[in-house]
Image (cartoon, rainbow, N blue to C red; front, side, top):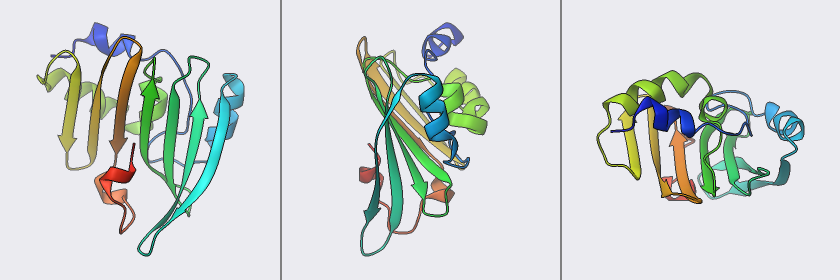
Length: 149
């Protein structure tokens, strides 16, 4: 079970726009934290189009935010030596994360929360963390979950 102390330890850095929120704050947040916006690219397939912003935190963690072309963040993913500030990263879904983490009993190194309006998967150990969170209803048509990493 993920305790509140563990959840609190998972919140050291602010890096990006919140899940479900407008993507416009990503650049401002990165600048305020001396993080760097490493890239912004448009992913285009036969069935979907979206933007990916890759932001590197001072710790070396990379946060990717996935946004529709209309500018709403539908997913976030991270990998690196630290976990990003989940309160900022998950935005209005942070409370859902906290309540889901209290109920989750998946082990010390893995957390999975599946609800109708929010999915989060996080795993790792010291200096090697990965995770993603997304809003199932907000995924653009044709986007595969394998693309969100």
